[in-house]
Amino acid sequence: MIQSISTAGAIPALEMTLQFAGARQRVIAHNIANFDTPNFRPKDADPRDFQRVLGEAIEGRRARNGGVSGALDWQESSQIKRGPSGSLRLNPEADSGNILFHDRNNRDLERTMQDLVENAGVYRVASDLLRNRFQIIQAAIAERV
Image (cartoon, rainbow, N blue to C red; front, side):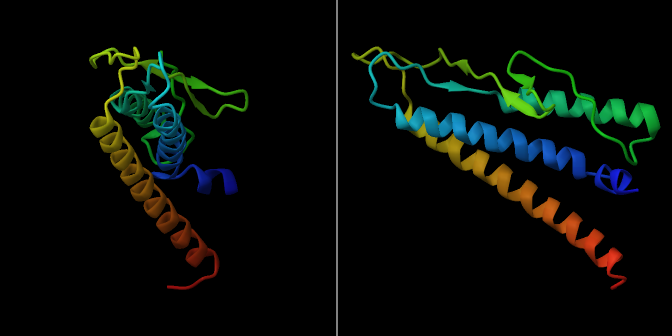
């Protein structure tokens, strides 16, 4: 019963989104910490790749059982891998779109800060929605309206 409650509705998608946003935040923080490191190439995981993987997993769940409940069976991509425990792990790739500076670093402060803020927003929204789902479950268990 607990398994069916914890995999009902949007909970698995929200958990996967939190895992992605948390892992991406670590990658972005690593990029910021190495901004002045010569020959450093910032890496990132493309949010569109994650959205595609998540969308395919949701569609697969809908095809299996109508999408009401069940774990998300997602497929790995070049940037999104399964960790040893089945959790989401990132394999970020170097971005080659920026101009190299004299120290052979291709940093872009404005873009990095924009990525940081957007990713923090995704994490915040997903965590708020997940907290709301768990509060609804908690209220139902406590038999409150």
